[in-house]
Image (spheres, rainbow over the protein chains, first blue to last red):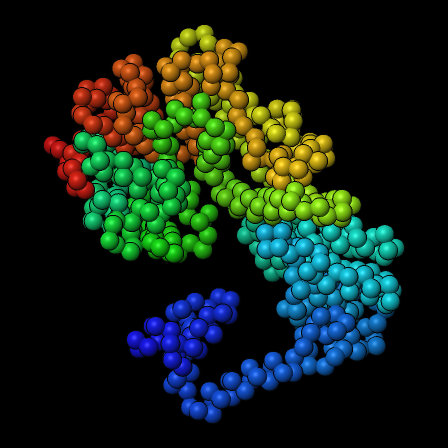
Length: 202
Length: 375
């Protein structure tokens, strides 16, 4: 496969495209490309059709930023969820994680990332203006900030809290602590300290 | 604890080397550039996951090879642990008893080493970064979670510095830039407090041990005093987390304008220093070369003492080029000190130091990547 190594021809072209995917390096990309070469035609075309359909149909919801085939998305269209709490997340996969818990019945707002000066991401690059506008229009009873417990997520949460409190809305942050079904001895010290700080009466 | 066996593959100038070691002193003798220090470096690599010569592991691979491996059997109170570290360009794989370690912090700490080399003399007169690294390395050895805590801190620091750099070059409205900075202060302070809490805890014990040991080895009246010089301002000798938080908050507020114009974070663990004062005067500028050697010796002894107190374990002592920097009396003290460790690996350009070794010892001849045991 000298052609593939040189990155030219149809094989090299697919490898090059696959390598754009986060977490896929040259080796994995070549393995996937070899696999595709061996696939029966209909399965290979089904894969390319699936990618095409995804790109044609799935769009960010104009209201919350959730990825959906309808606009507004199913969650924003659900009248039951109106006027309750608004949960702010970094990315759509965070939304899906919360949604699959079944523990939240309000609406979401996807920021599209977190503050990261190293990557040139300031508040203007996140969907924060849209969030402020929604709060004024929808008047939710609470804003739950569910950004990741990383430095970037914490900074984003703090920025949002300072920005939103003057609007007269209650702003809360999700709790951090020990995972359910886990052993205390395996919790890392930082999580443990946070869990102790955030203890509650039983 | 002791290293019972050591195997090198394509490591520096060793294509293939397998050695078994008893306890006691092992003296590697050879001319310069034959690979004596590389042996100490290999042992150190298994203890810290990095080189004491501040090099990236991939630079330690033998020329023309892509992968190197260092393996050792480490013995601690009758318990054997196999440590293996394989590395090359873009690859670092550490295993403990054949089990791969997901994080480097799962690997470090199985083998405790104290290294003593001529470069350590720069600890006293060199830049603050060297003293911070000395303290940090001790903490890594005593608290395995410190690695993650230190990494977390440097990530927030890089973010905050990137923001300050941007603010120093652009003319954004000041209310807006204040809000941007406020957002990063909270995670920054939280991460800094986690680093400082462990720094202060270990520092307090180190300082006590250093002073006592220095009195013993120097035998003179010059009293040695160590203090932690915090960039956030003076603190009591054992500040609580709340006190650390408070002094950081105050100092950050006070120096915010300066930080914004200079485009860098000026307050925090990365700006702190250890003050070393001998007989009331700054050692860096006033101590003689001989006095400096005595202080470094006390620091290293104290490091060993902390391992004993924290983990009830005696680290392996690594001494590089013992005769070069130490006069007769001090190197005799150094050899006395080797008796404190279960095992010591020592390099020297000639075997004239042998008569001074009190403990059980074995001499090896090192020449261009081969090691021969002498009878």
